[in-house]
Image (cartoon, rainbow over all chains, first blue to last red; front, side, top):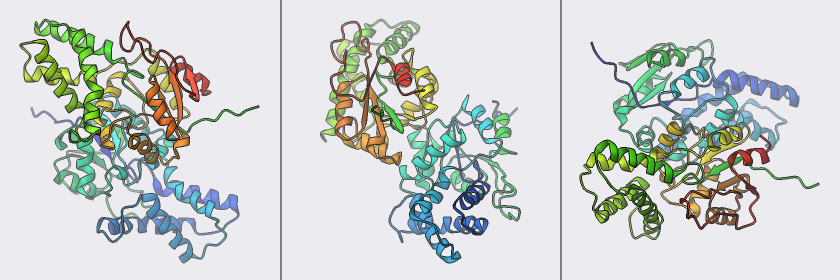
Length: 238
Length: 238
């Protein structure tokens, strides 16, 4: 009988894996637009905003932009998208409020229950491109019971830079092989696995909306493949 | 009527303020010595170890030693004390186990209940000279419900270096005036207050044992003076 190896700590991708950024932001912006009497295609804004996310971080990692937080990158992208879409009437306070929408994201329905179960036996933490402040605010609002929070501002690097995965393991005082990266994104697990971390995949087939084409299935030899975070907890014996 | 100003986040000194390091270590070491058949004056060892704590950190802050973690400083001090006291029979594994006693400290009786109440409305975190790993392990063992953990390894500085207090506020995305330092040590609050943080004091009159001479009373114009963490929660309306 083979013994299943188990991690000491589990670090979670957050946007898309733990929280449903797209539905949260569309709902948040639609309600906000209504309250402010501003009409716009908020769904299109959210999709354009998310499309700008990875390229903006890549510019920092390539050294084309100095280190800055995800909030700052989001704000630059938001300004551009609002201008491109010709949305008018948004004040500086409105834009600040909209930008902080990423601090108010809501969890998938299994996230809080699954994380609470996992916390009973494992150290659990996000490893996210958001800041400590963003992730702390999100956890307070969404009820995410993290033991520790690994924001990108602790490392001055964005995933998939190795400094983030290895930095989390170092701060936990654990070898990478005792830390498991859990995510709904195969690329995240591919890098984590190549650095010696354990890996767990669960799909979020509507993260990008009804037309999602990527990450519908595991694409690698991951240590655990689960339906969701509750199922991951069951597979890990809690 | 004066409105009482309240913080957004409360950061806690940990050793002595939240956990009872002296009783915890004496109990831990006494049980360990018994199990290993090694006789020593464990209480004297613990008091000597704690006496070496502040000077060892000061050597790092003065640049006499390179940056290193509190675990490493503790281990050097432990080696010296064991030699000075003539304790024999401790293996490398024993010394590693003893050194990790600082990861296993137990809370004062009001700590978990008080922190749990405060967490319902405020962001709560330790700001400690321990590492993230030490504080995470301590929180798991003691049931401390932190939102975030500020270990000294995030800043490469030990308190009372300003980089620690201001670094915690910066990572929380808050101005120092929205962050409150809570401690049983007047010196900690003096520095925090001088940097613009709010301050809360509660005494731990037996932290250093029955002969404690310091920090029996507040010695400053602190924003809140409480009996313990539960009383602080009451004063903060939770």
